[in-house]
Image (cartoon, rainbow, N blue to C red; front, side, top):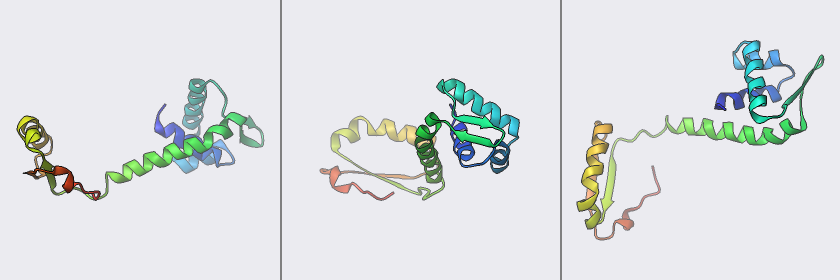
Length: 135
């Protein structure tokens, strides 16, 4: 299952028809229909009852809709994290044994992965005193 399928499901559940949902999602109606059919096959039950008057959620669809909305909400909030508060410096406070044992290896790997992000580290008797809750 892909997150986009959950997005499709939640939009369709709040729409009056598949074509209306497809327009809201900016996708072709057959693509939306196929994605939802595959999702229903994966789950093993139908999410929607289709009729001439449109679509309605099945009891199972009604049951999972709040969970699907929550998962989409979580995903969207995670994406936002990537666009907020870009780090410009990292401060590390470590105890003596950690500084000699693991820190050099970690710093080398980190600097190779993030060459433009400076890291300051301080060897401290009580590194726990430097714990920050801010980003």
